[in-house]
Every structure is written in structure tokens, then in C-alpha cells.
Image (cartoon, rainbow, N blue to C red; front, top):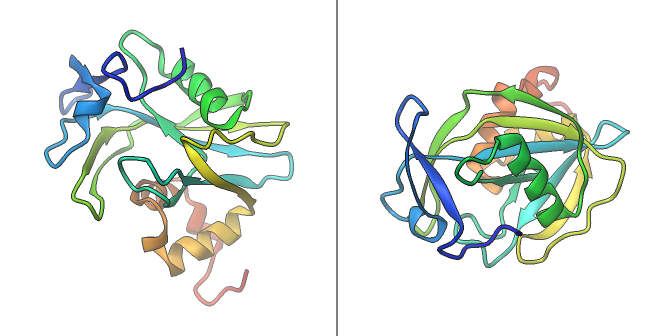
Length: 186
């Protein structure tokens, strides 16, 4: 079943230590007082070493139209996170992933978008590789672009407000900025 925002699609609520404490309909979780819940992010790379950036669909509840990492999502109750990663890759981008690696197992963030909606997630971060071009699901992604990581780092440093806050934080923790010096040209 593809991801949806219907009450049947629920997210896993967690405590501060990441232990499951219940579930809630996905449609009810993201608001001005968002409960801490489990999510994931994935950064997809092609054979040339470029990372796939996506621009969130304009009808997304949080950060509509904002550029972000390849894709994000929420595992369902009792669903292994790696299975959720594969499910969302297929649903949002039409991609089959290979070499999936957990790179930031303890990533956590809380951020408020311009409309006042809060993201509050324990969000392990994965990387993966693909051999094919994405086939975008327009209800999830309005645009996609593969970019060199160094060019991404320059853009993130120059205009962090143009990207999702979780991408900026993840890039920092994944050391994307390490090879970029102030004043570097793309």
C-alpha cells in the first residue's frame, strides 16, 4: 500500500529515548504542538557521486515547495525502518535502492515552518545508490536535480533558508561542508 495521509496511515510516537510509546494518525501529528515521532531521511547518490535533491510538492503540509534531501518518510508500526525507506523510494521517486547504509542513527531535530507547523522527529539518516533516473510522484515531489556534493555544500552555506532545516543539519553532521572553504566557487 503506498504512503498516504489518511487516518489509516499512522506514525510511531516515541519518548525522548526513542522508545515507542504509541501511535497516531499521520494526518493528526504535524501541527503547532507536534508529538515526538519516528521518521527517516535518505540521501540518494548516482554512479557519478551526485546527490539527488528534491523539491517538495506544493501541497505538502510542511515546507511545501522547499528543496530538501532525496526523500523522507515515516515507518509504520512494526515496519522495519529499512523497509519504509525502500517503500518511500519507490512511491515518491520510482527508485529501487541499492547499498543502503545507516549514516546518522541518532539524528533528531525540531523545526517550525513558516505556517507554524512543527516537525519533531527522531530521524535516522540513510544513504543509498541508484542506477536509474527518478520518476517523480507529483503529489510528493515537484522537481528533482542531481548535484555534486561540493556544489550543494556551497549552496547550503550561502542560502540555508532555501532548504529544509533537516537537510542543512544533516549535511553538517554528514561532513558535507568539510571540503568547502569560504569563498569557494562552484
